[in-house]
Image (cartoon, rainbow, N blue to C red; front, side, top):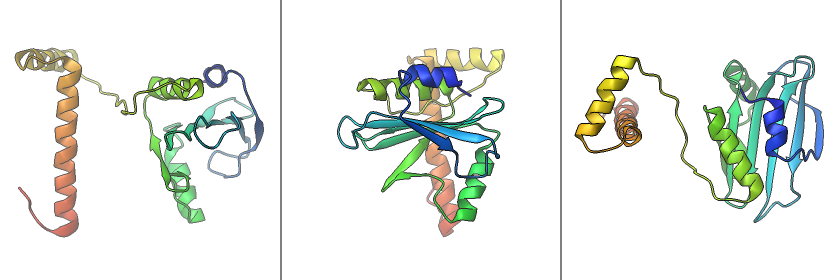
Length: 183
């Protein structure tokens, strides 16, 4: 999980408000600090960090890009289920950032920091989501050879494989939901 220092540096140490975190999912010592540039429309952004006042452990960070109506969030994996369960208990959407905008949950710290820093700086950023993959040395060599044989980079090869898996998952989900085989 990113550190408080990384968050503060990314927002230029601009903290505009803070207080106790209103939900129970992170415990009684959870606190939230917010950074906001004061603009809710084009050029506007806000960022929040939720952490423990005792251990300084970071539970959650988020950034809202009001210009492009996007919101990104990184929740400490140890607490993701607790956050979702509390949203369910409260009858709230765990994914809603504001109005009709849902959070895009990120899993890679560097991905969150890149987006946060670019949004704060008012720069363009990559809206794709980075996905961590873990290969053994043997698998890595095999996949690199396959990518080479197809005259593509390793990243392109992995991206193509992940997209194919997602499409298959969508077809499988449709079949499960509607009892129809599209294959």
